Image 1: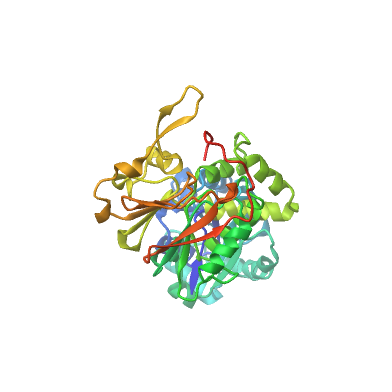
Image 2 (image 1 turned 90 degrees about the vertical axis):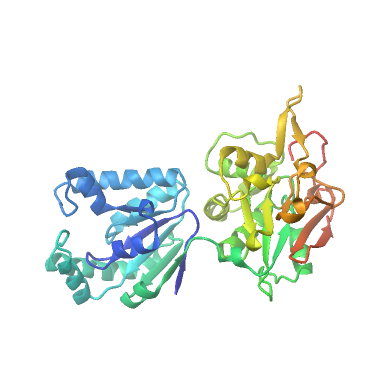
Length: 419
């Protein structure tokens, strides 16, 4: 049994004292990801078992969780969370930060929970409390499946607690083969046609286990950005695709989080298309975009280091590294100053690459090309589909190009514009 969680979410543990929640959480998550009510009591009054400081301890508990969610970090809320009011507060914190909520409930028999609690000499709450907790859990187990605010509900027996694994990183990273797809920019019909040519089903699965890798810029300028975002979100959520964000994606993420961004370069059209959706569908899509797409890394190294993917490219010395400079490079390319008009001066980093034949094949997009060419073992896969060009994919390791023409030009290409 594998429990899969998005890269950013709130995982609420629900169970009686003595059910093994804390032990389970620390087995599967980093200590920094787990916010424990017991730890908050200890921080407030130096005693994890003290009930006298509950109000202050839970004020810290909720504030700690809120700050982690604000910074878009996967967070495990380790408390009993047996009562609806306790879960309501946590769900409200998550939804305020536009983060999905998963509940993991621990269905441990009463006698087992009592035994485990008795073995905890420092934090034992006693048989009476555990019995009350177990009765409240029975009610929670009936209520949880009806709670439509939850993105996932996982109920574990003691046997499943011991055997279950947790997945928060894509298994698709180790796929046998990949299809790297250039900038889509809202061209859903062309994307569907291209995937069909590549052998994928309508649901995005491939009979040989191949995985599509999107180089970013899913939205803006095209006819159906919400449709593309919905489709790719679903694939990433099901671990059927990989994605690196582009500059257009980053701007969209910031807009959806309430940031002040200019609605330019097609974002105005994307916003209009999103506002045209039914409210519930729009909210669901927004939550999924921020949960599954926004946290993705700015570059990927795949196939044992023989393939790298970044939206606007990446130098060899940056592979596997992380910094603000690298993030900006992968989103905008090698920008070396600005013209008097304010437009960026871009350097062609691919032509300067040395010893490319012994390094990874670097796939990228960002700048539309009339023809796909390999340069020093790099390839720009942006065929300018939204401008009437084509949508391109590179099959790897075969290094075969597959393209599909745009059904029409949806936007006018400008030479001096942000890609």
